[in-house]
Image (cartoon, rainbow, N blue to C red; front, side):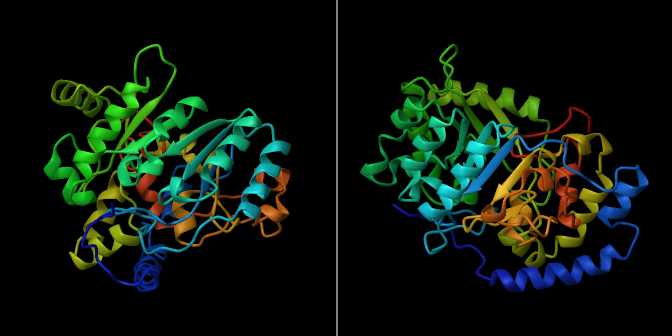
Length: 352
C-alpha cells in the first residue's frame, strides 16, 4: 500500500535555484555560515575521523512525507545497483576505522538487493543501522518478516514517528501511516526490539511539523515513552530530535508559505558553537545511490560533493585524502548547529 500526501510538486531544480538566489544574498553578509564559524574560530570545518558510512540505497519509497529532504516517493526511479554495493563492500573491507554502516533511502528495503547487502556487510563485522519508515513492514507480504530479518542480523532500527497521536503523524506522513506504524512497532517489540536486556536497539525520530526548532530531546523522549507505553504497550530505546533542513520539500513549504527568511533567521540566532565539534559531517561519509561521496546526507541532496576532487566517487576512494578534506558548507548547515544541534543521532548537546 502506498502511503502518500498531496505534497508540493515544484520541480526540485526550481527549489534549488530559488535557494541559490536566497543564499547568494546571505553568503555575502555577516549571516553566512562561513562567517559564523570564523567568528568563533571554527573555520575551516574539517573531518575528525571517518567512522560511519551512511549509504543511500535509492530514492524510491512507499511514502511521500511533507518534510522529506530526499524528495523520496513511489515514483522515484533512482536506486543503487549491486555493482555500486560491491564498491561499498570493497571500501568497508579495506577501511577498519569505519565501524558503522547506516542504510537509508527512500525506503532502503525496496532495493531488490537490500537483504543481500545487509548479509554481506554483516560478514565484515560492521554494525548496521537501517532507517526503516515502519509502514514498509506492512506494505506487502514480502516485507512482513523484516522484524525477524533485522533480529537475525542484529540490525539497529531507527524509525521516524512525528507524534504519538494519529492526527499529527498522518498530517506529516500520509493517511493511515500512524496506524501502520503502531502495528509495525508492536511487531518489532514482539521479536525483542526495544525490550530491556535484548540488545536489539529500536530508536525513534521526531521532526517538527512547522517552521520551528524541536523541543528538548530528553523531555520529549520521556513523554513519548509514557504515551506510547500507556496507549499501545510500545517500548523503544531512544528518541532522536532532528531539525528540518531548508532543502527539498521542506524548502518548498518554507518558500510557498513565506516562512523561509523567518526560519533562517531563527536558525542563525540559535547558532550554538558547542555543537560544531559533534557535527555528523565530521565522522560520517555519505554515499549516494550512484556511488558519489558527500559530507552528509543533506549535502548529497543538494549535489554538493566532497571537496576532495580526486576522491569523489567510490571507484576512486582514498581514505587518506578523505580524512584530510575540508567540509563543504552552505546556509542549510545552520540547521545542524541551532539550539541543541541536530544529527542523524539526534541532538548534539544539552545546551540550548
